[in-house]
Length: 158
Image (cartoon, rainbow, N blue to C red):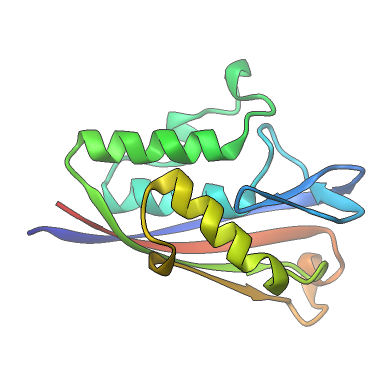
């Protein structure tokens, strides 16, 4: 059996009046992520981790922001397609470990819903998806409420 690990990162600006979608879940907030798609920073980091582990480039290569078909797209669809592409190459997901960095709102109450949603999209058990939430202790662009970042590690097997 071949095993690989991949790392993913994404960051987005926050803007008032935008929906905040993280891990496929809408979270009540006065501001949300700005991006070409629905700007789900957590899912984008997971996609990059999966693509990286499989040596299949990155999310921008597969779903470019220059392609109008991805404008406003639900990122769960991108993740589902990412999983399909990996499966085509013979890869299966072992586990996903993520860290979401956002000053506000509090994310911990939403983690079980995010895990459930991601489990459904990726067709893997909830216990194979770790989501941790951190603040930046009011430092930098995240601490000022200007943006959000996500980090992800994926283990895949063939």
